[in-house]
Every structure is written in structure tokens, then in C-alpha cells.
Length: 118
Length: 106
Image (cartoon, rainbow over all chains, first blue to last red; front, top):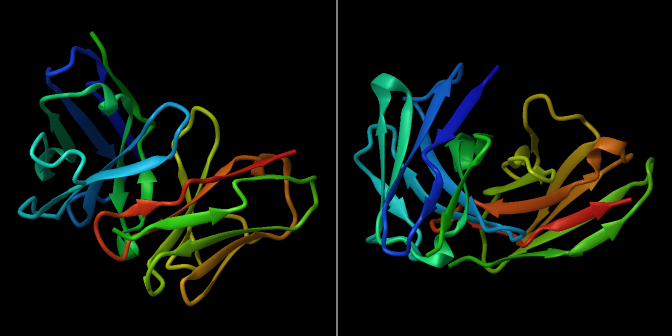
């Protein structure tokens, strides 16, 4: 079945960095925009970033602009999120998702937990 | 930013009931509205896209509709597996924004 598998989450100190990866299989990848969405424990969903099919155009939420960088490798069906200058408020489960028709997120990964704490 | 509100924030219902959840956008978003279902510890799943189109594999008891900036998700006959949290999301403009969610329980 369709699989999006995130990895790279973990515990990091404030000011530190992490790189999240998302491997996509059994799903068309290179023809679709891809995005990252996060969810703080017990809270709602926050869209944080989005990248075009070729990787030439990137979009970010103000909360992460200048600190996070989204990228993709179409040859390996992979999406990435480089997270720098992490803050306690970045603690969340991070999901990768494919953006389908009308930029709706039609398939999601299982999520990876990022905890920012000293 | 486009703000999304949902009502109610929580809802108690029984198997077989018909329930309706409402989502309102702070400005016109056309039909750039999706509905997701999320169960505890799991990723959200797409139910409805373009306000009223059923995603592949989603049961036909789920229906979406739109009227201006108001959107509704209706479940015609609740099944045990439908008890979850439901979110709306606008994809009209970045930053894409989600509603705060509606928790549907027994």
C-alpha cells in the first residue's frame, strides 16, 4: 500500500538542529507538491512548509521562516526538512504529506516526534 | 492569514445518528476546503476535498457541502469507527490553515 515514512525526529536542545526525512513509496511523487504539517501534543494541526514539484519554489509559515528549509530528491522519492535554531515551541509531531488536487493533503506519513528541551 | 473556525468543538452522538460539523472561513476560499479525520495516535486521513468530493476509499456516508464561506461535513449514519476528531483545512492561499477540530465521541 501507499507509504510515506518519516524519520529523523528525536530530542534536541534549544538552538539545535535536526533534519527530517520522508521516503515515499507506491505513490506518485515527482508530479506532486509535497508538504510538512506539525501537531503539538494534544493540539491542532499547523501547516509549516510546502515545495513545488521541481523543488524550485518553497513556501513557509511565518513561525518557521528563516529557520527551516524544505527540499526534495525526486530521484529517490524523498522529502526533507532541515530545522535549525530550534525552540521549545517547535516540539511537535511532524507529518509529511502529498499535496494533491486543490493542494489538499491526500496522503500522510505516520509522523515523527521532535522534542526541543534542555 | 485566513482563519478557520469549526463548530461544535465537541459532539456526543450514537451509532446510527446523523451528525453535521460546520467550518467557516474568514474570507472567500471558493471550494478550496478539505475535511480530515484523525484518530488518537494516528495521522489525519483525507475524507473530502474541493468542499464536496469524496476521497478514494471513503464511505459514501460522508458528505461535504459549501455555501459561501460556510462548509459542512455530514455523516449520515455514524458507525463505531467514525468516532474521531475532524478538521477542516483551507488550501486557497498560504499559509494553509486548519480549523481547531471537532471531537466526536460516543
